[in-house]
Image 1 (cartoon, rainbow, N blue to C red):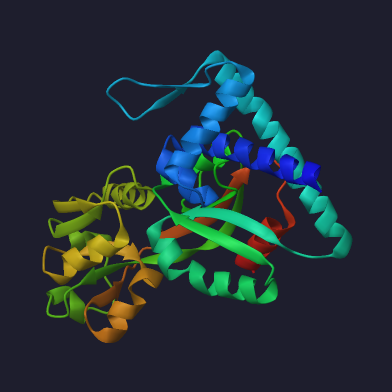
Image 2 (cartoon, one colour):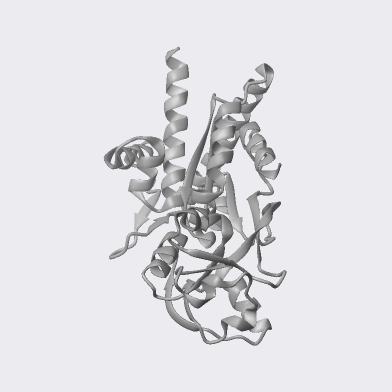
Length: 301
């Protein structure tokens, strides 16, 4: 019994070290493992004392952490141990047919707040011994976290095929224009891209896939708009439109509540290309756990 406890403690220590390397943050590593930041520091010091090697170094004047040569070797070996341990747990669960464990999922706000909740609730009902750990981030960070192993699944808009990533398409959402109910566009049944010429726009920031798609579609129709504000998440964009900064183009599921309450008018866009693709991404070289597979199956229905 004591040996089992020691093994579990060591596995947890390896996970804390890997989480610290991947997040570059003592607070995030602590949060992921339900311990304090000082406990994370103590675990790292304990590893360095045990192996008599410096594993991590702080970058002077910055928050970044750099792995030493010994730290890189230790990190890679730790990832292999953790993967083997997860595989062992999966094998044991498979013998009983139980779907359990935690699936770490990263997604963007517009999907996580407005599209995933019903699927998460259904998953928890079907598999009460499993858990979805959902976090919100930007697409570029989500891709990095999936590739690094910090999260198991990413659910993103306009998923791009990339070396080391597998993509599962989930269909798409129509993009729509939102404006104040008293705006001239509010009475229109449909708008063409050319109707948007020189209008005041609240936009996503330039590195966000929906912004890149919007720019591409407008450009293909020879349309230019006036950029009055840029934000990195859907909720801020909606609030900016509500206070009259301009109009915006957003995924329809993200504005159903505002449409129902009358806070915003939602106007369809005529061209067929105003569709936002959505997909799940995961590492192609890593076997998914049973819970993760079941969650993808549920999303893909």
